[in-house]
Image (tube, rainbow, N blue to C red):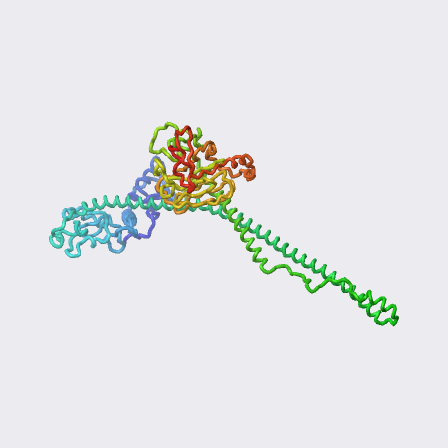
Length: 592
């Protein structure tokens, strides 16, 4: 009997009633095939019997017999369909080592036979008693790698000394004295280690992701800074170009005016010379005419008046001096350079101050740090020397001798800026200090000791260092801005009213929290009674206020310059060692 054509489709073996593959196919007298159950139900309760396909009418109900040929064909078709439905081997799957032709996917691997089996070829291992004892595992590729190359035995142990997989024979030879454990036991140990490694790797990934975020955040923060920098640059360059254009116009006008002055001088001299030439020409005509007269009397009478020439200038020393063009351009450019430098510094300082003012922080003074002579306002924004020592509890935070106070707020990273009004004061100190500074007894306030500050005293401004740095003082300071870039190690000071940079300390080593630091200076009989005031940034404050200082005139007249003189106050209760000329500011203590 020929085999079924496996290229036939399911339609060739389907019942026309249930449309499924034949189940117990039977044939009608007209030659059509149906499932026995389907045709029986179709004819139930009917008086006439006809074929569902060709409608042939049967007078009596046909005697249905099984169509053996169709039944065998259907069985072969069902088997071919089942074979086709078996899973095929994907690239990542293990093929059956027994299959010939098209390999099917292996479902188990035998570690005794060292062969991988599909479901069909695995059947003997599930049925035969001897094969049932074989160790079956999930499908594994390259089973030959699981054999010891030296002894051709299964690698089932692990040498902890050499950290390699070994067979039983290896433990009796090269690894005889080495500790060995089953692979499963070492697997569990290594799996635990792998979990730790995975955790460490995950942590490293997270650290790098945080670093990426940090870098991206830095770039994002840099973009507005770059935009502001470009805007500031455009503003500065525009102003400088305007100055250059003004210089060009002034220079051209000066050269033109010099040329016009020269031309005017030359024009006047030429006019005078032409007039003298005309007078001399007339005289020459008169002389020539007289030379031809024969009237002796007339000749002698006229000769006397012609003998003396007309009044003329001595032109031997007269000359027109050209404008001094040589060197004028160089001198003008030198003057322009000086002007541009001043303008550039002014514009850059103003732009820089605007930038740092964007990092303004809200700070208030900490009464627990204030030296006992100091008086703080209720809002914690003003401080001055009250000239009377208060009985305050001592603590590790409080300054005992130096007239100083710190803020409640501290900063350990990033940038911050604050402004302090110093108007009407003869002495003050201002800056930042480390949290770890010494606050007891006489102190030397230098960066080496954790202080970065400027000091105003005796009409001098200095940055306290070793040695002190004397700073230029253009006008009386009204308000001082302090900017700190913790990460860059930078502390900068600004004259807020004049919009100029005063001084910057670079390369600073901060180590730990930084606190804004204020020192209002001693009372001095009321001369220095004005407070230091922490003020909010006000960029729109009118510049004209700098010119309205009539109320300061009397104050300046009352200024005293202290150069070491000692004075007794409060009936000798304390002795005041005034500011030393070297500006060390060591002795504004309770021994005043």
